[in-house]
Every structure is written in C-alpha cells, then in structure tokens.
Length: 214
Image (cartoon, rainbow, N blue to C red; front, side, top):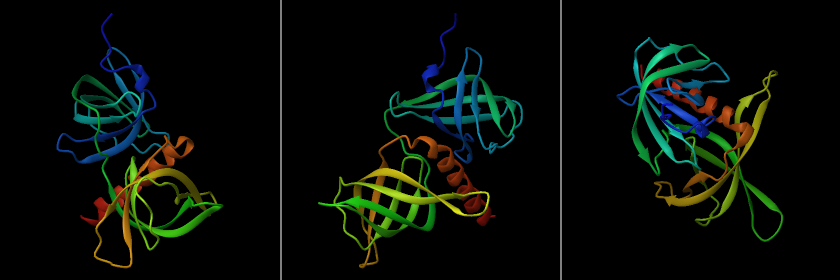
C-alpha cells in the first residue's frame, strides 16, 4: 500500500488555496486524504471553480501536526468541493503566517483585571485565520489573555451575530496616532463552531479588497 502524502489526521484542518504566484483563490478545509487524492471542501460553497489540470498551492494549518504546503493539480472542482491529484509536499514548516486582510471595523475586547470582566471598544485593523491587529486607547500588557467580540455575520433577519474569539496579546505596534496603541494578537483556540464563519468572513473581505483594486 502506498504511503499517504500527509496524515489523514489533517482532515478538518483549515487551508488556503492559492495560485502558484500566491494569489488567493479560496479558503476551505481538508476533507480527507487518500493514496490518489487530497480533497478540500467548503461548507458554504465558497470555493472557486477551477479548470481540470490547473496547478495550485495549498497551505494547510494544524496547530498540533504543524504546517504543510502542498502543490497539486485540480482533478474535480465545484463550489463545494475540490480534489487534487499528483500532489507533493513542497514545504514542511513549523510556523507560517496566514494572509492578512486589512479592515476597519468596530469590536470589543473583554479582559479581566483584579475583579469582574471588563470590556472596551476597539477598532480591528486587520485579521487572519491566526489572529488580529487592533487599536485602542486602553493600555494592555503583552501576554494578556483577552477575548475579541466581533460581528462576523448576520442571521436570516439581518441581525448581527457576534462571535467571541479568545486571543493573546503578543506585541505592541508603533502608531502615528499618539492617542491609540496598536496590538498584535494570536488566537489561542481553534475557535470551534466559529471557524467556518471566520473563514467566510475573511474570504468575503478578501473578495471586497480584490474587487476594489480592479
């Protein structure tokens, strides 16, 4: 029996699908791995339909197993699922950064300091699948664990749906505005049920950004 290209334990890992020139195509999840195929899916049918034989690069993120970068050729492609053949691992890295999407949206940061939880209004400046950058008048210490409350979607009635994303402040960032401090944060959990919404939100913002440049 042939050895699998990557472990099937990578199933359900979030991945980025890119052209070989690193242009973002879509965000999805690994559905499964066989001796012949690597299958990727999107619960919200947000994959782009690609041509048979098109060469793509897939960046796969898994905090437990590590990062993988796969190159392969499109075999089947729909809005909901894609399969790749003749794939190979072109990078096996301990750490890498997801693409970041610039934005300017309101959010709240919940934190605890010697007593009940408190919250402050902040502005999210960019976001990726691994973390956020925000600015605030409130001063936080590097290493502080906080929760970012962000509207990633709306329900069927158009009412905002807020998601709470636990994260850790890992650095401060220089800013031209003396009234605000910018902070870089990384998500501390897999974000469970909100991961699909986070993927959809980021891909939506990415499409808006690409459309604005055309």
